[in-house]
Amino acid sequence: MSQSSRQQFPLSDQPDHPGDSVSDEPARSSNSKYAIEIANSQEFVTVDDDLLREVTEKTLAAELVARAEVSIAVVGNDVIRELHDRYLGKNTATDVLSFAFDSEDDTPGDPATANESASEPVAQKHIEGEVILSAEMALETASRFHWKPLDECILYLVHGLLHLVGYDDLTESDQKAMRTREKAILKFWNLTPQYADQPKSPFVSDDDVPVDPPRGADS
Image (cartoon, rainbow, N blue to C red):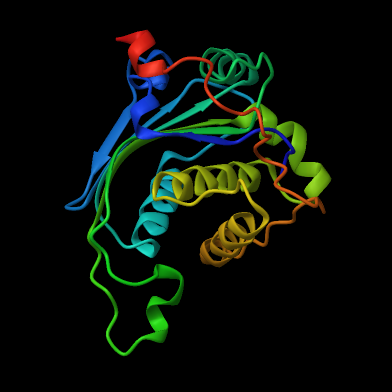
């Protein structure tokens, strides 16, 4: 996994769907619980929309999400650099950005330990958001962690989705909890992520805050 900045914006600071400009014809699908929109505007890594949809659905289900509207944009470094600069004031490419537009959580208990209880909690989380990931960054990074670029993309997607449901990695304890969930979810696809040994989160630095409230700036 790369050592660039991952960021989830507070709900009050959300931009209006920053990935809307990625593609005019995103692939849309929905089931009874999840509406998923996928836009792929890059040619660095061959991605399968059905796989991205499966990763999204299984991750949301594992996190007890009852209903969701999620947009996924797969882009190159130039696009994600522009968004990173616009919303974080950093003119550098990064691996994944997530934007939570709406969220409700009426679910009792902790999904990480749900199977340990006698009666599992009912999924009651409702989320709306967007995950933007750089396949070009995945291509550049994957060999350092001894797996395929598509595997790295899946990790970026899971990581971004976990941000949408409320996980963070600003502190060491939060990072540990988030990585534990990433590892558990990635087992669905027989993937084991590797992380650089860092004393604090490699994903978000202390100054990773939006320079201006993006929603107000774009409205």
